[in-house]
Image (cartoon, rainbow, N blue to C red; front, side, top):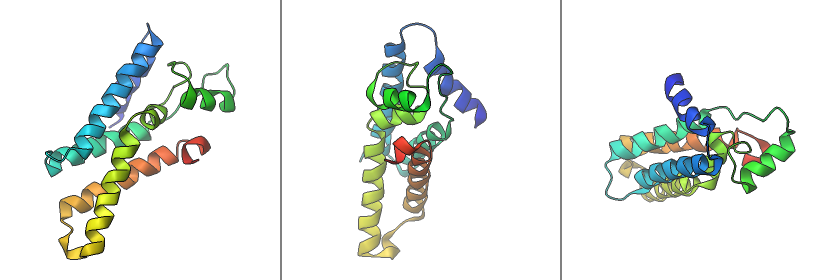
Length: 146
């Protein structure tokens, strides 16, 4: 929801130590990745984690007004400051989230290739949500797609 997105975005905008804010955001993203890829998680827990990742990735990246887009994107993927890392897609790209999403999709493909009737409705929902998360990250910028 919009309120959830605003609350999550506030984590990146808090005053104080920018590197600590980014570290906290990456820790959150890694925790969600662990929930998504955890073998001992229920389908509902994994689906919830994928929904949170999708919603975070849907948040809009904000460029700093005093920087051009290319400099900002370089900083998002190479630097470690909140000023340069203004969007959740940058955080997710630097965390284990993308790996977890891709592994989840790969497992789905393996299962569905063996026998499509083996795919449960909850697995299908999880796959769909992971596709949305991946699409939201890729839709953030050209750099994300590269």
